[in-house]
Amino acid sequence: MEKEIKIALVDDHALFRNGLRGLIDGKRNCRVVAEASDGSEFLKNEEAMAADVVFMDFAMPTISGDKATIAALERNPNLRIICLSMHGEEKYYSLMVEAGAKGFLLKDSSIEEVFTAIEAVMRGEEYICHEVMQALSGAMRRNEDAEVLSEREIDVLLGICRGLSTQEIADKLFLSKRTVDTHRANILEKTGSKNTASLVVYAIKHNLVEV
Image (cartoon, rainbow, N blue to C red; front, side, top):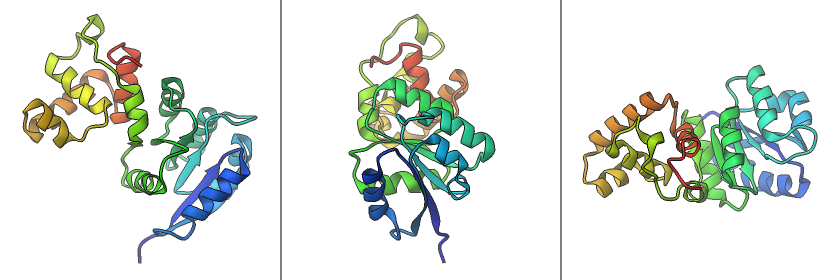
């Protein structure tokens, strides 16, 4: 029997929590085990702190989502936190990724995408919704900040920031999938990034992507 995935919801709007709980609870082997109205309440809730996946709002009273994420991961590094926010701007994304969030969704995301994000983080991956990726990625700049990367690596990084799959990047650049994987590995090493989410943050902070 497939392991039940325990979900915690942290948001200061009760109606939103109730609606999301109704969409998630009991479906695809998921169960909502805890709710909290802000970061402080979440950190005091033992069931929430022991969940597999936490959906965390960013803008909340008492303790913001990024600060609650940092505090929670210090106590339980195995938590998989997905930011679920009204705001897709770079500052919110960067703060949550740097805090340790594994995913970022907008509140108008479909329930299908919510389950896709759950499945991704449970596999040890990160998940950023397509709308946020598109908002974060504009034109790639070729300037002094990009000198650490080759022209082809910048092309691959742009594809990553746009949310393209490895195969889509390969097709667009007329490369093999293996070559794109090699470029991605080199980009991760050169930039000191751990995953796709941190690559996007790197690109933004080093003015490689216009937002």
